[in-house]
Image (cartoon, rainbow, N blue to C red):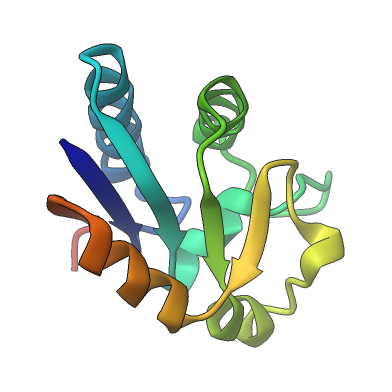
Amino acid sequence: MKAAFHITAGPNERQALHSAWCFASALLQAGHSINRIFLQGDAVFLAANPTPASPFRNENANQWERLIAAWSLPATVCIGSAEQRALGEGHLRPGWSTGGLGDWVMACTEADRILQFTGER
């Protein structure tokens, strides 16, 4: 099975981010694949380099960074969401790159399952 992950939960919504990470880890360990992790909305802060002054520091970001590196996963930050939050390529953690909704649409067409993780609203 090939899965695409769409995450919109912000960094303060730790349970949603942790659930997404646990699900992704379990899928990969079971022999499935992930063809794209796509962050949109406040979730883009998950890919941001931590700064001492940042209110969005998050331990989940370290877990995602290791998972992406270990499995060579394609990880994309929505360029529109990043620009609205003043996050450019130079502000992203290793393994993350910016991309557009076209990248997400392409991932959806190639995936067997589309998984979305949102925060509580």
